[in-house]
Length: 251
Figure (spheres, rainbow, N blue to C red):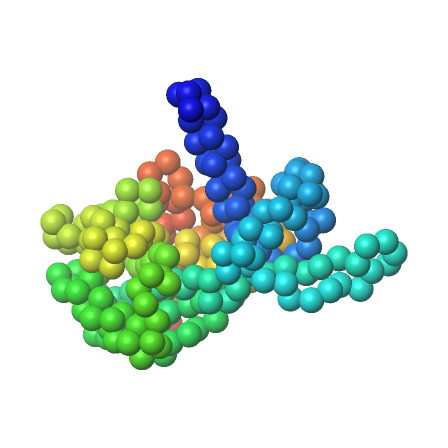
């Protein structure tokens, strides 16, 4: 086979994988949909979409959930993600404690939520959470291969792209994303807690159908998540929305 053919095949495979990822992403966000809606959203032919869906069904990532009522014509089939196609790890860290739980791709908790005494300046934070993670895997009887990623919500000046939390006092421990990725063996995404809440509201909450919104995180202090043009806005260096240290006290 010529080098040109190999390159075309590789590009074709990459295009197919990217399309599958887009379909999985839409199913994750919308929970259920039809081939027709996917076809319109992705601007691709219905046969192409159905071919992709059949392929994803064969690999166990997608399943048919039923049939929609039709107003005429072909009865539309409803597709959704197989809830156990993949799991993720959700971690929330605040000033005094950290929580960890396993989530399936229907956003359902599939393990207990465990809280430990720790914070972003704890040098043993990652190791402590990893030990709990192994316990949760054992309790659920699931292999590590089912876990595809890790999301960490934490206070501080967080550069998500670089996986760095500049609020961590010891510079040696600021590359928190790299530390989690290396320890857990899956891609870790680190985000500021207020922006993470804004993202949750944008994808699944009250801001789902909005283009612009402000989400206030009122807890130990005040945080702000900014949704601009349908996306969480982080600013040029990832610090947009920071109110700095405004603590909540009586009166």
